[in-house]
Length: 228
Ligand code: SIN
Ligand code: MN
Image (cartoon, rainbow, N blue to C red):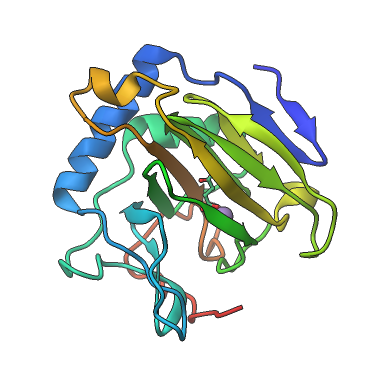
C-alpha cells in the first residue's frame, strides 16, 4: 500500500479494512480484560491524563509522579502485560522497516473529551526503530510538527484503520491529538461497546537489540525513567 509522506511521517489511510479492524478490536478487548485501562498521571504534579491507557508486549509505557518510563508489569495489577497479538506484529513487519520485533504496544483510549498535548516519543533507547501507530473507532484531529516544540505544525484527520509511521527524520517529531470527533465510527458499537471513543495503538522498540537474532525478552532491562 502506498503511503502519504507528511514531512517524513508516513500515513497509510485505510490500512486496515473493517473486518481487520474488528479483529484487532476483539484482541484489544481481551487485553483490557487482562490488563485494565488505568489513568496515567503527569510527572511531578500527578495531574491525571485525559486518556486512559493499557499496554501489551514485554514492556509497557506508563507515567506517574516518578516520571515517564517502560515497565514490565501493569501498575495496578502487578501482572505482566499480555503478549502482542498477531495482527499487530504483522503490521509492524509490514511497515516498520526494522529487523527486530517491537517490545511495547501502548494502547490509548480517548473518550469524547480526551486529547493529548504535543510531545515527542523519546523514552526508547533505539531511535532507529520507528513508532508505528494504528487508530480504531472515532476519528481525531492529529497534529504533527518538527523536531523542536516551536516548529510549524500540520494537522490532519486520522480515521479508524489508518496507520501512521513516525520514523527516519520524523522519528522524534512532536505530535499530539487536538480533539476527538465523537460518533464518527460505528466500529465500537458493532462490537457491543457503548459510548464510542477512539483507541490508538503505538508499537515501539524500547531497548537496543542484542544481536541479529534478538527477540523480546523479559531479561531486557527497562531503560531508566526519563522526564522531559
Ligand atoms: C501517542 O502519541 O501516544 C498517541 C498518538 C495518537 O493517539 O494518535
Ligand atoms: Mn506519542
